[in-house]
Image (cartoon, rainbow, N blue to C red; front, side):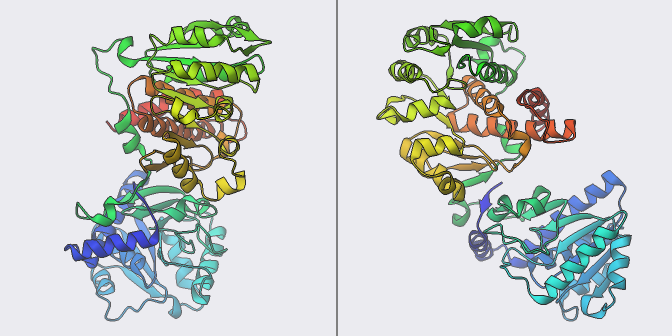
Length: 519
């Protein structure tokens, strides 16, 4: 799924219209796709009645087209028009000819029809306001949304709410929301995801997110210049390494996980287990000597390199031991649980010249790396860097507030300057490549706001990198799997508060199994 601004989407539609795909045909395609999703939900849940809130813009038109299709398919349909004329409107005429019911907001002063429709409907399609909406709400729209919300809150069994392209009252560029904005259970967006939907507070209103293809012709210049994707199951599934019956452990590479200290022994274990879970043929753990006895029994599948240490932290002299282990490795992870000791920074500094394989830097490894002059040029192959905002601040000198205020631009800027892939972690994780490509993970959940979840992500990425994915692909696939595993863990536990990094790790296999259904 592509990510667009409102103006970019308008430019795409203008170019498509000039190329022969008329605006009316785009609306027809959008409405048909919307109807197909609604019909599928009906079949799954035993639903057969739908109400559409129809505004004056294109989203209202999409909704009328969908209602017409659904009426013809046997659904009981209600169209509730707000500030939209019903006379001389071919879409309204078509809908009435399909057998649907229609009411004007202005002709329902007591809201009896609104209440009756909402009580009678299994699904409510919100097509009142479109992607061009800007705050503040106009009086009539504000009144209608406020009254609708109050009715929905009082209903014992309210309808399933579907936002058409975007929830009404949401600014699709900034993510700002009117207080009266409806909360959707599902947002069905047309052609591409509008960037404001993946910002707060809008994200709290969209529910799940699905895309409808409106039939855009191939080769549109305005489409080709889009450089940001939104990860979805199809995209992630395409990136997974192929696994055929003739495979052996060598087929899926060797990940060398260099991690841990006596203060952070769990980081090494989580990263190593994640590399195993994501399908790596062999995982070799390089850890300070005191950690080996404590960890080996918890990861019997791994081989081990025992590193010299200073008081439980990897020491400068460990670089030689790791460099010897590089002979068999196809990717290396450096950093989880390292701690901030100077001797560990010297270890990284001495190790860098020996690295001629894919590398992932995480956690304290990033902080040490940033203190090494010219580190960007000393990494021979494209690396994956996985900072959270605090680590990104240490690497760039920017404040966390500056980074968080423009995550996509910051991640892209430094990926380009450094020449390496940046995974800026947090709500809506951003993966940025040096060539300008970006992918947004459409997940924001406190389930992942727990110690150790970043170590799981680093392990997933290095495991995929070891299996032959390039730096950008491994980062996108790893971040998507990680986010979905966090959501799944929260669903299983019934709360985000109790999700541990190990719970996220336990759900990785289920996420991969679901993705394999798309291949």
